[in-house]
Amino acid sequence: MSETPAGRPAADHVRIYEVGPRDGLQNEERPISLATKLRYLELLADAGLREIEATSFVAPSAIPQLSDADELMAALPRRAGVRYPVLVPNLRGMARAETAGVDAIAVFTAASDAFTTRNIGMTVDESLEAFTPVLARAGEHGWWRRGYVSTAFGCPYSGEVDPARVVAVAARLLELGVDEVCFGDTIGVAVPPQVRDLTARAVDARIPLERIAFHFHDTRGTALANVAAAMSSGIRTFDASTGGTGGCPYAPGAAGNLATEDLVYLLDAIGLEHGVDLDGVLVAARFIADALGKPLSTKVGQAGGWDPRTGQATGRDRGRE
Ligand code: MG
Image (tube, rainbow, N blue to C red; front, top):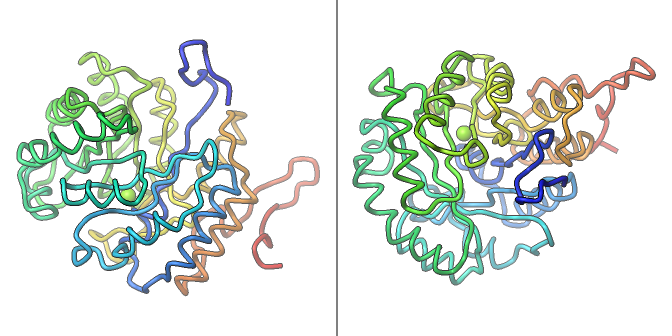
């Protein structure tokens, strides 16, 4: 990874933050075994992904698919240079994360009270209060910390969201110690002008560009356009889910998370460095699609990559041999 002397990513380097094992799987109905999850995580690291959100320490009853978080993190072989953040909602989850040998966490709030009230039973302010001791404790341990601001472009319960509120929530999270804020387009309604506007407002609020990530959903086909808009504003960190797992709970049958393979194809074609191998991502994408009993429905999962020397698609058979 090329870095400036300040330790910041060089301008041509894009960070891909993989969310498939956590955000992707949590919405999938078919139960996935611990062994399958561990293999998925292994394939993702094999593909060159260096930040892989592994699971969530929410109450096991809240998300049954991720109720094996303790076993998973205890069994997961750590690799040098790979960060495995986990979602931690409260001090109870924090105690579990400590026992499981975690060293990077994410907390999850939103820009609309209607959303947090339905999803985590708290207003946004109450959620920030709940995270305060969690983030302080993680800071004492020297752990990496991320804060999600969901519904950054629209809420499934209250509609339009004021970008000033989005930035205000992000600023509070940074005050509480997070290393990075991640703006989530939870229902996949964002378009490029909104992305540029939100980024400009964040910069005006003195939030450094390198501490901003975007989490786009391809629900309405705008995810890559939004990535391009964010990149033109100087953002270099994007979330994606290998295999496009997860769907969209607010639009049954629709796509959700931007697929890692679709993002990697775009970045490769532009010539931006990111350290992730498309063929390796396609292997992991096919593996998890098979485990879920679903066809791989992402764009690049279906079409493959493209070799300009031969004109042929690439990677279409990877993971099938
Ligand atoms: Mg998502």
